[in-house]
Length: 145
Image 1 (cartoon, one colour):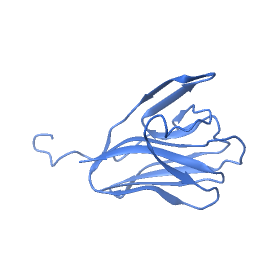
Image 2: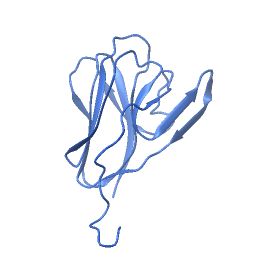
Image 3: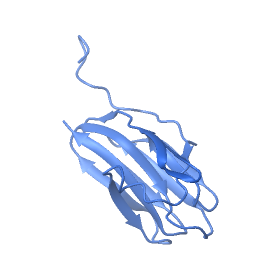
Image 4: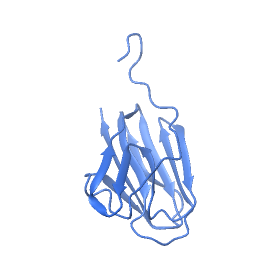
């Protein structure tokens, strides 16, 4: 807590355009992340919809397999404010759109990877919306305070 402040300030902006190599592996399994599976062409859906206070520590939209048309989009809304809108036009087989945290797989070396968690606070709510022409997934983690 900041002296004179009213608690932890929620994010008002997150940078878009971050990608991480995933090479089609299931990101959620080795990292004990929660996962939302999206059926391509289902319109915009809430991959995450949490009421309360806490911190968003990891979020990535990705694909398991190659092929597809692309047109992928994700939006992060914290405490009712859109803090990130991002899109990726193309097949996301070898990349994932990262909103919070970091992930890097190394080609041909499945067991060698790097990851780190972020810490993006929210005071009232955390919503992540996604859409895609393809079957995709959203892997994420958070904690409540």
